[in-house]
Length: 82
Image 1 (cartoon, rainbow, N blue to C red):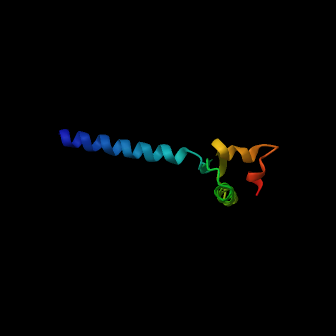
Image 2 (cartoon, rainbow, N blue to C red):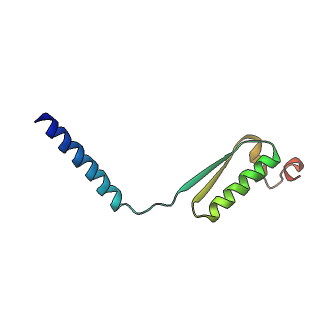
Image 3 (cartoon, rainbow, N blue to C red):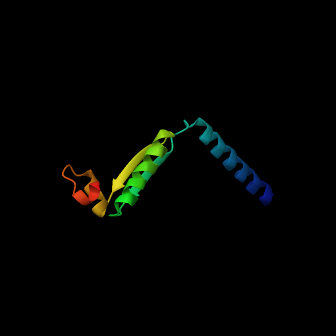
């Protein structure tokens, strides 16, 4: 009797979770890119890969940390631009 109760409980849990997922709208995937390197080629590659992902549909957010944040400055250092 105990085994039957456990089986019914598991079956109801599985069917409920499957039902709950069917009711949700299909969310767009998200991408968060962390760019932390001071190397300009690495920064550029992070931007290129983020752009390619954006063209395929997901929402893309880019977090610039440390010296990589210099590329977001209006008066960016010359080392960032070369």
